[in-house]
Length: 542
Image (tube, rainbow, N blue to C red; front, side, top):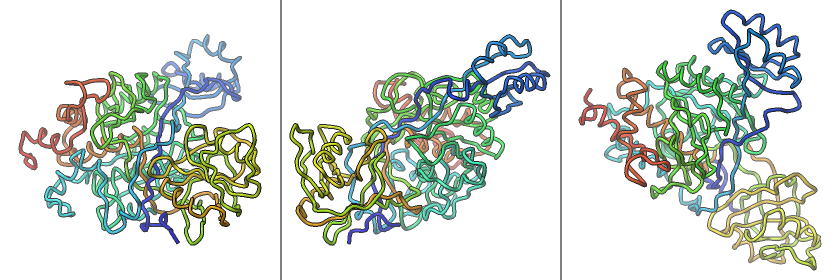
């Protein structure tokens, strides 16, 4: 039986592409969600006015002299004429949204079983040149490691029980997504755990290792729920509250693999205040592959991070504009994950791991296996009555493939990749679908040999547990920069955030056009070179 997804007997390599941030309507069923700034000393009277307007209170920011509320649209004009109200501003959305599944090749999981894997990004950013210069797998004596610095991750939570995060100093956390603030220790989507692994996965005998080898401290704020890329959203005010929580709990670096298209004056003011207070904020440039600003990355007080691949080429999805400051590995980044998939194609004595198609139902279906080719729509339906149909990816949407199989009477659909490696997919919208999963190209081609035999398709939610996957996105590039900042800062904690930022930009490896450009910023972040710059050319000497 092939059981390559479980614990460290697998390092699953699903290449997912995370775009972070799309515009959302300013008004909804609850009316307008807005920031309301009041004049100094007028907090009580403005609160009373908002209560009379049937406002729903979300946040109160004394530092910004502002409330965040949802109010009926018809109450806005009256509020705007209140002399104690300075301004009213829409509270824009910040969210995680998938762009498209990646089709990039992945290594076979079994190749990663015998020893710890060092993700390519760790060496691209020169992390081991600082703490394992001789490459013996051990942390060099007296080398900076990130110890003494705290990185705050604002994301989907953290799976604390992950095998490769045991021993990491997690100083605490908070969840905004549930009435139980302790829910930050659950990461049902996995994005936050993936980010954390890139920063701080332990240097041990299995799994992966982070840019800081299990040594930097973490504080976690869970701002998104467990629905992940299909449903999750937050607002700029939620992000501001999260960032203030980071500051209140000793964060030196704030790492944000998230964004939105709309600027918020209050959010900008908040991050500037944090920067002035000595905190370095790092955020994903976003993944629309265009020159549009996304926030908070495009505020002057925040480092905007672009994504490059292992060859130093900017990813086609990476945002490009004059606010991009640094580039870091963001294609096929292998890191920790909080769940083990539990969807399969059982064929003969083999079990091929799969992923449920988004919007398809969970369930278990048994039938004879049919080769449907690419399952293209036809005028005359193929008779697949009572069969499980194996379809190759390509030419038409997954929804079209599944519809074709349904029209032919098929019981379930298994879509295999048309390039090496596995992938994830969606049917686009809710509907009366049949069970549908995706599998890798390698497994799909192997399964073709079982045509006409009885097979079983199981589609089920993933199980909480330790696993590893390679993901794409500026989401994955961001923690590289956050971790490098903490790594070099730990060498001398008396340095300021401004000095650390300057060192990172001055020593970045120039890529693309000469000098700073819109695609790479100043270039690929370089830990050792920044350390050397800070130490006057003599690393280790203060």
